[in-house]
Length: 215
Image (cartoon, rainbow, N blue to C red; front, side):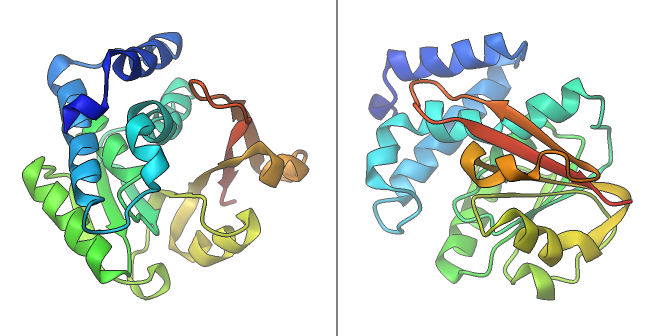
C-alpha cells in the first residue's frame, strides 16, 4: 500500500518534523510508515478514516498525532515510565504514533467500538508495541486512574472531554487534546489551560493543542 504515500507525502512529513526539530531514527520512522500502511489496508474493511484522507495520511494524521509529543517534549513535560491514556482512540491517532516515538512511556488506547479494538490489537501485535495496551471499553468504565497524561483527538467539546477524564489524572497530570483552533480559542485565559496553535502541511485551517493541568 505504500504507493499511496508518494515521495511528496513522505517529504511533507519529513519537512514537518525537521521544522519541529524532531529527529527520528530510521527504524522509528519506518514503523510510522508501517502503521500508516496498516490503517489504509484496514480501511478497506473497517471505516477507520475518511477515504479522502487516505492519500494524505502521513501529512495529515501522522503529523497531527505527533504534535503532543513535539510540544510536550519541548516543554520538558515527558519522562520515562509515565502513564499516558488516550480516550476514544479510534484508528489509533494520536496514541500509536506517539507510542512509536516514546517507547519508554506506558500507553493505553481506550476504545469501546469492537471492530476498532480488533484493529488496534492487530496493530499493537504487528508493530510489536510492548508499551501499548488496548482497552476495549468506554473510558468511564476502563478503571484507568493515576495518569500523568490523558489525550484525545476531535471527540466532544474541550470541557466535556475534560469532565470525562479528569478523575483519572493524578495531581499535576495534564489533559491534552487536538482540535481546530476555532473550537478552543475561547479558552484563552482560562486557569491552568494553555492553547498552542499550529498548522499542518497543505492544510488551510489552523489547529491547536489545548492543555489543562489538574491542580
